[in-house]
Amino acid sequence: MIEPVAFKLGTLEVRWYGVIIGTAIFLGTILSIREAKRRGIEEDFMLDLFIRVIPAAIIGGRLYFVIFSWDYYKDNLLQILAFRSGGMAIHGAILGGIIAGYIFAKRRKQPLWQLLDIVAPYLVLGQAIGRWGNFFNQEAHGGVVSKEFISIFPAFIKDQMYIGGQYYHPAFLYESLWDFFVFLFLIYMRRRPSLLEGDLFLLYIITYSIGRFFIEGIRLDSLMLGSFRVAQLLSICFILAGIIMLYRRHRKRGK
Image (cartoon, rainbow, N blue to C red; front, side, top):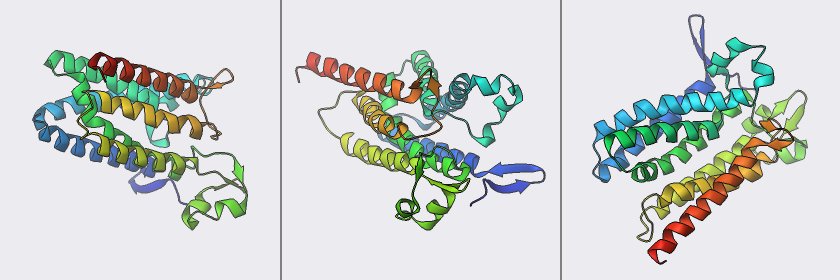
């Protein structure tokens, strides 16, 4: 098993989870700035945007997780601030980031759809990288599988998915691969002349949510709302909303 602690600075433990998430954020920021420059948007503008969006996304992701895990956190309030140990929800991060981005774009009189299109491919690329933080924490996995099944994966994944004397589905890997596929799809689609401003982000919402819906079905650590998996409910909402918005936007255009 790979230890979740990457290294120590005195008494401070730096965990792989934080290193992976930090790397994903940094890479997504750099690539988004490069794409923005290609579209004529200054680097300083994008830096101002990310200074607001990144903290809002982190807070949103954590609050979402805490809200739907309140049975645990109500008796462990200090653990709410234990970001390094994991416990983030991408849906909360997306919602938090969009809210902050909307406020910033409105104040700076910049089209929000354009900004969302710029960051969409690199957001899902960051998600593909970030899922490996779950790998080091041995979380976001699926149900029990046989040794024969898990042996089709590389040895380091097989070993890390051996938890409590049993092997588990590497669901984090499935989602990482799906997210990387969505990234490649968006990179291909963003140059298509038929796309309207904002379509790329809507395609991200739809395609990511399709994969997340099915992968969430095999996870054992899903956040629940009664007997329903919250991520699946939100995925359905995002898929329907994205399809309806794409249809209405292109019907008005006559295509």
